[in-house]
Figure 1 (cartoon, rainbow, N blue to C red):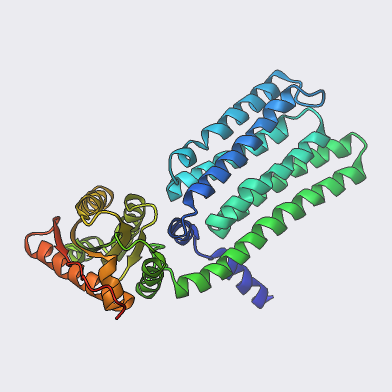
Figure 2 (figure 1 turned 90 degrees about the horizontal axis):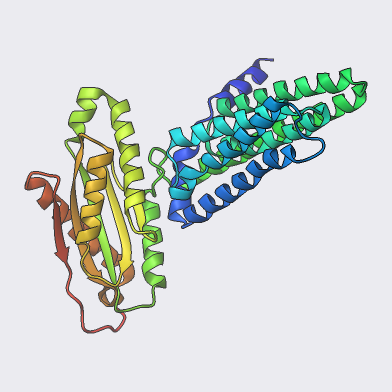
Amino acid sequence: MTSRMEWVRRWWQLPDHFEWLTGYLFSRGMMAAARIMLALMVASLALVPIMLVFSSFGPRSTVGVAVSWFAGFAGWATMVPYVQRWPSRTQSLTVSFVATACVAAVSLAQSDPLVELVACFGFVTPAAYVAFLHTSRYTAYVFAVAVVTAAIGAMRLASAGQLVGAIALFWFVVVLNAVIPFGVQTIVHALGVDVVRSEWDPLTGLLTRRAFYQRLVGLVADNGSADRNLLVAVIDLDRFKNLNDTHGHAAGDRALIAVGRALSRSADDDALVGRTGGEEFVVATISPSANPTQLAMRLRAAIEKAATPLTASVGTASVPLVRLRVTGWRAGIDEAITTADTAMYAAKRAGGNQVRHSQLPMVLDDDPA
């Protein structure tokens, strides 16, 4: 009994997956596809309650019809953040709760208890979404709503003389809403532990220093255009220690998370974003331009807006890929990051919240080193 209680306690305390999964999707270039997939899926499901209004077995009461129409439009409204951009954790949870409430309302609004029970299968969608991105307690909340709603439908169906069918459908709803979401959560958590340990910073969801270097070497080596440039930005938060000392480490962690999200959203779509130290970050991308000023100013402004009152000192370096062919990929990348780091310290000595740039010259001899 003690071991079972310990297992339940550990499951209840599983951490949120939102940040590292967001970082994972972004770094792999899967963010847009994920947003489109979710928007299309939910928009399609939101059509169901509206279509039921026009069916012969849908809701017949005025309230039931109104609830179905409202739930359909509410489902479409929840997709607005996903159409525009990936939502914040708060927006994501809000969408989950609204979706759960809509499924419950549509199920209870049905005149036929059999249809009500079938509608409870719709809880699987928000439950799986919450299990994928959020904590165990939120998954348990969706499961509890599904069980209560299905139990009401089962009692109505049993009262109509369909006891066996009511038990069968109720149990089907319970099993479906237990196995799929909790299975998803277990797999994602297990995957998350391995991925975070090897590649992802567990706080910000950004690449670790080691993973950033590995990915960048691969990105540079795979780029066949010799006339393009590697742009690197090293970012260090100004007066971050003062924030920790004044407001505590929890406030510092929240600021780091906000900075990570700001950098991910402000960097180019194919850029790599990593956390290389306590309050130090690095961004790298391949560009036809040798001037990273626009990127650096965008990153600095995004941090200032997202992590007020913190600001950032940004140092940048650009190096032609043809130079890296001479120096070697890894040595050239180390040189570029070291140069950007030196520029960052120059920006910090100048008062912070500034950008400084260094450009490495092209090497004419492009024979491999």
